[in-house]
Amino acid sequence: MSFKFVDLFAGIGGFHAALSALGGECVMASEIDKNAASVYKSNWGLEPAGDITELANESGVKVPDHDVLVGGFPCQPFSKSGFQRGMDEARGTLFWNIARIMEEKKPKIVLLENVRNIAGPRHRHEWDVIIRTFRESGYRVSEIPFIVSPHQLRRDFGGRPQVRERVLIAATRFPKGTRGLNVDPGLPDLKWAKTNWSHHDWDLERDLPLERLRRGSEKESVSLGDDEKTWIDAWDDFVYKIRKDEINGPLPSFPIWVDAWPPIGLIKNNSNLPEWKRDFIQKNVLFYKAHQKILDRWLKDWKFLETFPPSRRKFEWQAQDAESLWECIMHLRPSGIRAKKSTYVPALVAITQTSIVGRNRNSKRRLTVREGARLQGFPEWFNFYDQKESASFKQLGNAVNVGVVFQVMKALVVRDYDLLADAPDLLKAITTAPHNPDLILSNRGNLLHGHKGPAIAQEELNLKLVN
Image 1 (cartoon, rainbow, N blue to C red):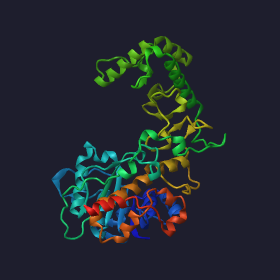
Image 2: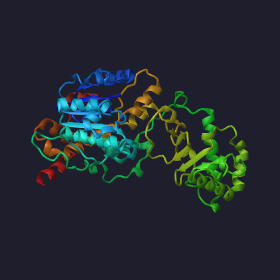
Image 3: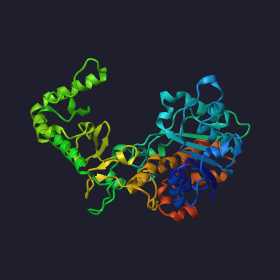
Image 4: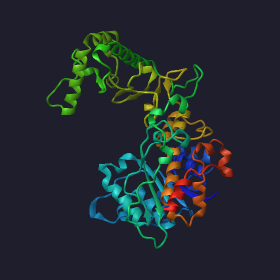
């Protein structure tokens, strides 16, 4: 292997998959969740250590030397009192434990992942502390949030049909004596993985691909219950009736809320409500009046949805010109049933909100665990063994996307090539890796015997060297 990496908050190994495909060797992983650690060990052959606070603290750092440090770290609030220096202010948070490792081991590259909200207005202070800590520790890093989603990347570059916007903090250590700590380098450029591609081109059945399950083989967690089918059938009938009523226009873009319609009137147009809610109710009332005859008949046919829970009496159409709800991707959300075209799915979070596939040829069902693993870029041989599917979905929902990490690492090396001259093995491994991590991960043996492939970043590197 050409470089060594440490995998913190490792989960089931999304970072491990990406960095292994780039030619790296994991010398230590850390994961506190025992179930996730068991899956990690079974697939990657390395047993993660436990709590990071026992590995890196004021007493010392029990982490082997490494070139690259990665992790999807939790973000607790940092204190705003005292306006202390970055690393001191982060004390007491898990980011501080990462910073201790950076300070002690001085890895060449650090790549951290977190939810998009970490760089949002409510966490501006925490974000500033993180960036300041990196720079005080000697790293080139941009203060601009680097937000990446797998649905933005081409399929043949490891992209996946999933909207999963995450912030990647990509940093490279300055060699001793180099200046420019506080000069913002800008973000790594992922244009090679996005060129000639539109997220509208995704097709879930083709590009994931969806599994073709035998009839009757679906597990309980995948199959829809009778109530769920009834809810979807009712709203599918709604779509059909409104589509048929072409004179009065198409399906509305705002959420439908049956309880706001005059014949039901559970939600009153109360002047005490916030303006956005009054506006929302008014739109629903006008929609009902425009389609009153059709909607009265629909309500009667479905017994005024009286057995539907409140969240299933709401409906949001985002599927443009689709003709049927059953040809869409559906999500049973606390805010209602949402339907969109069968292109890409929202971020995988938990089994209770797993996307429902209406377009699949042989069944109307939820996504399977295998399809969830594909959405995150894990190889086909990746195995969850006999653990409960709910646990597997939870682990996948907490995982990093393999293709995103793979491409961000390549882009980071391109941006910071000038800082990595003293790490030729790392440079060579990452710049000559194939442009698609699937080419390596598809065969488990490739991870053990190295890889060969087109150097997708080489042209970018050559341009940097010339300039």
